[in-house]
Length: 150
Image 1 (cartoon, rainbow, N blue to C red):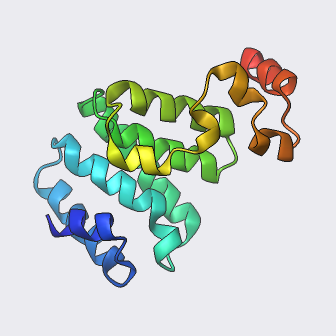
Image 2: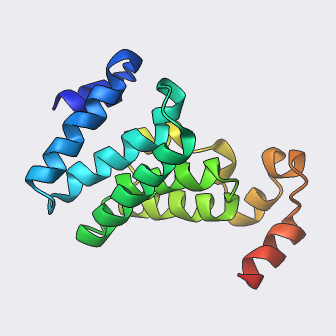
């Protein structure tokens, strides 16, 4: 519970302590998907609040999101954590897909509504032409051709 409070408040001085608490919890009960999901979320944003290495944080997020999804695919949180990982790696189509999977699982997931980029909220055709994609030189045609090639 303390780790969730740390996550919800984004308490940077205690953030690594929250991760440590959750690591202990998954060691005790490795089959509890919600703990893996919260740990994935904390790792996904840890580099924003702590001096943790970005690659270490992203690896932790991916590991625990994958476990949580395998244990309970209907949870929104691990999909949202994966969206953060994909975004940090510049994999924007994968990020969009992960956000959409999270929203499909729980359209009322508050953390997701706060962290979902605005350009992912409209119809797909609009998203390809979002200001963010245009700013990064990603036109609808480029994104569509990338999507069909992978």
